[in-house]
Image (cartoon, rainbow over all chains, first blue to last red):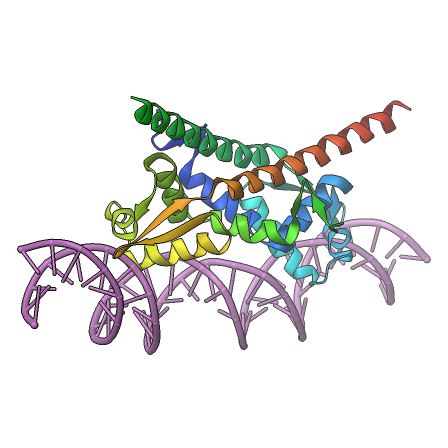
Length: 113
Length: 113
DNA sequence: GATACATGCAACCAAACAGTTGCGTATTAA
DNA sequence: TTAATACGCAACTGTTTGGTTGCATGTATC
């Protein structure tokens, strides 16, 4: 049984996940992948202000926490979103919200007695 | 009307918010504040592995994105959670999920026709 | 008023990060 | 087979980050 469990997502797993989301360029990448579907590095770099190499690094960061996944196709590498991990982050915040509500409830009961 | 809007939370606002959440020590602080209620710096440092000054810095980071708030009370400074900003992060992820679902729906319609 | 307590301020440090540039390698296409 | 395309690798750089330590300042309390 896991210690320090919060809605199925471990605390030590959640931090790197949020850290990966904590960059504007990476958030834009995620949004692009979400609405525009999978794309090659060159395609993903096209509208970006930063270089192709920078995009590659950001994609690596995102892939390390499982937010994206890539497959080789010919001479290009196609990246796609892994929405499962986004759900994990979502779930973690849900867990905190639940804790918060519980604490409020207990405080309410304490005051009323 | 705001540009680059995603469920009411701006992209450029979301990145620092997630970045603030992207540290294990800070996540633990948030969890502590959620379940244990407000506390002084000394109280919040007590169970921590790092120094009081480190905790202070983390609280500053959290306060800069509005996740916590502090008030002076006598010789101590009491910190409390601001759940509104947590809801913002939550909402942002919701927005991406919605985008993702829409993209899937469009793809489905495209394939079926 | 002296003492203990709680915090603030500042300097410092190593490591990580976001980004660039240059060059090499694989894979199509002419 | 020669170009053009798409990517990978590596070195380098300035800045941020997470952390420490030492000392100063404000505030109760006796």
